Length: 448
Picture (tube, rainbow, N blue to C red):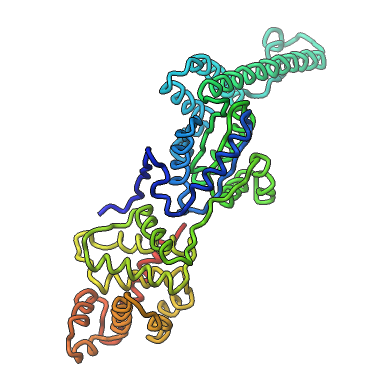
């Protein structure tokens, strides 16, 4: 069993073949924005919460644009943030694209990129241009008895520094201008039918705050040129938090972000009130999060229970994602060689959902104040093909209130025996610590 996020696969022939979220129409709208901005120099913001399928969508959209002969580059910002140099990371990705597609403009672009990179490094390393102290020290070292007009030395040093700064500013402007021109020429060669080159920046909200903010600024000041359109895939609220971490909590991060985005858009949400959509979304998230899927009756039934409880408790996108993440934490904390049986799986599902939906009940369990009726309220009202799974869950919840005498006095049905065998170490003479133990186990994984 591997608890890792799975890679996204997109059908080349029909990018939206598995578009159960029905986002092909949205991809068409975004493409229209590009086709209506042939000269480029615009930025599209694509916002969506974690786990809503942003990466899947932009990769489908990229293939969709490819079929419409619109050139595009996919840049995973999170993959590059270890380099810390935004310009180098993005410039390399663009050059690799030009090299793979054998664009004649690639060598000129490479040379101009190198010039720009060296200049940016020099600007970072440069200290104060006015070295008055060293000038004075040189004169004193030559002849300590010599008298000189210090104001004249300062004046000459300042004039020299200003001349150098002026010349450097002119050179910087020329180097940046040449780089932008080379990128624009590359973009023009890359796309046909006068379409712009689209550069998709993904995972922007997962980067280090400083790297994410620098991407925005480098795009605006260096990479946003004629013939280029940027599409930023992100969770805009998380990106705004990154901006605050860089510039302080008092900055109006929302207004700051707006300066960089011409077309702010949001990824369409699936309609989870439709049970069919909820089921599709659920299994998509199971795969996305990297939860185990194997031919185990108890595991499969646990997932079915998860689905029916998510409907019963009306879990939102975020709540469903978090509950699945909780479930992943609990599974990861188990012995990988153990046989996951119904009591373990069902109660882990139940606690995972309660943790995001009812802090009050979790607190009651933690403080030994929860009753059986507290925990099963509403569950017994659900009827349908999952009725057996819900009855099984209610039985396991009931058993979690048994002490060891209760089990010894029971008729030892298969369900009781199964439960006892799973949790024997947590069932004592005075109390049953099964639910409390699961809550404590889950809370040991709280986010930092």
